[in-house]
Amino acid sequence: MSSYEVVQRAIEFTGPDRLPVRVEALGVSDVQHVDWKQTGTGDHHFRETIDEWGCRWVRTEAQNMGQVKGHPLQDWRALDRYRWPDPDDPALYADMGERFAGAEGKYVTAGIFMFLFERMHALHGFQETLIDLLLERERLESLADRIVEFNLGVIENLSRRYGNAIHGFKLTDDWGSESALLIDPRLWDDFFKQRYQRVFEAIHAAGWHVWLHSFGKIDALIDRLIAVGVDVLNLQQPRVFDIPAFGRRFAGRLCFASLCDIQRTLPFAHSEQIYAEAELLLQHWATPQGGFILSDYGDG
Image (cartoon, rainbow, N blue to C red; front, side, top):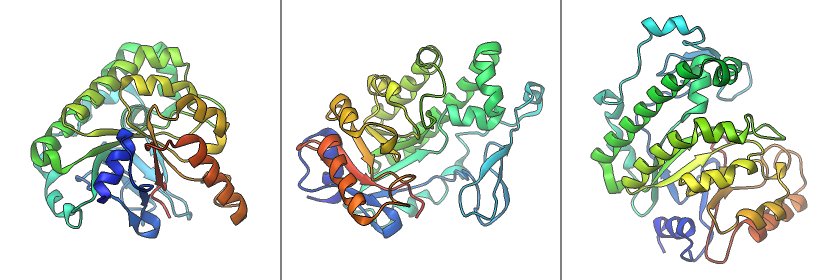
C-alpha cells in the first residue's frame, strides 16, 4: 500500500497493512503537510513576533513556540480600529503549490493553527474569554463568528485551488487541563458545538478528513467531537487518561494520532517503560481494522 492508502485506511477503518507513521522529528512520515502563508507564532528565532491576527508572541531562552502576551482585542474598544485578516487575500496562498513537492503517494494535510477557542483567547485574553462567555455573550459570539467566517474562507480557497490534492485538514484547539475540561461541557454544547459543526461540514464537503489536536484531559468532550465530525483526534498526553478504560469507550469510533506521553513518559521513562506504554496504546486504542496513527507533536 502507498503511504496515502495506509493513512486513509487507518482513518476509515478499512484495514491498513501496517501502522501509519507521522514522526517528522525523525524524518519518517506517511503524511506531508502543506502550509498556506499562515505566520502562526512567527519565526521562533525572535523573542517577540506578531502573527497574522496581530497577536504578540513572546519567548524565553527555551526553544518553543512561546506564548501570546499581546492580545489585540483584550479591550473591546479596540474593535473599532482592528484590521481583520482577509481569507481571500491571494498573498496567503502564493507559492503554496511548491510545498506539494515530494508528496507523491503520501497523505497530504493542510490546516489552521488555533482554530476557534484558541484564537478567541489569543485575541481577547484567556481569562477575559472565559469570563465573557458568561458576561459578554453577544460580543464573544460576534468574535467567534468572525473567526469561523475566516476559517471557512480559507477552506473554500484551498478547496478551489487544490481540491483532491489535499486529503486531511488539521485544526488545533486545546480544551483540557491536566485534570478536566476548561469549561463546562454544557457551555461547550451551547456556544461551540454548532460553530465546530459548521466548519467540519465544510471540510467534509471539500472531501477531506477532519484532524483535531487538543491537549489535556478531554474525555468528557470526545463524544461531542465524534458527533460533530472529527475523524482523527491528535492526543499527546495519553497518561492523563486511564488508557484501557479510555479505549473501551472510544476505540473504533474515531482514529487516534498519538504516541507515548510527551510529558510523563518520553522525557523521563526508561526504554522498557516506553515499550510497555506503546504496547498498551496499540492494544487498547487501535483495532485490527485501523484507528491509530503513530504521530509525534511536530517539535523534536
